[in-house]
Image (tube, rainbow, N blue to C red):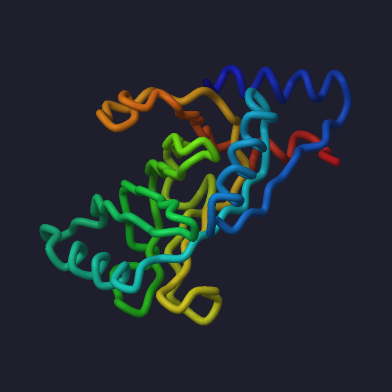
Length: 205
């Protein structure tokens, strides 16, 4: 995958600066989920900038604290799974690896090292649809930011989650999920993070 990204950047140099498309979406309902899906489909095999956010659960902070406190001495990571309810009966199923941004302190925000977001919603014909995002390693925030925010910048009462960075949009891997296999109505995308150092090589519009 790294070779593809490097070749894409080299081609951009040869052809001239290429405008990178961006999406700024607050995931709150079916409309926002379908908007994201349409954007990713239209820009598959391209580098894009994403700024996604959604509300954390009221107990998300407590869940993160409990997981952190149960780690073995010296551990800095926890695997966490949550489901966030959206308007219109849609939901986000999340599984990811959390890490401490600065040590562990209940006053600090939590970072996500890598994870999967599965957005589930019903189409107009009543069929259940799935939009899966598989985010590869952030190198603890060095390549992109995916953070749980509980400070004054959070937009939601229970906290906010933000995923932002530059990614090469590739086809994702099919998960071993019985629900998805039954439906067969799904879109899967892999978010391959593009390190900031590559952007210094080019002048993007």
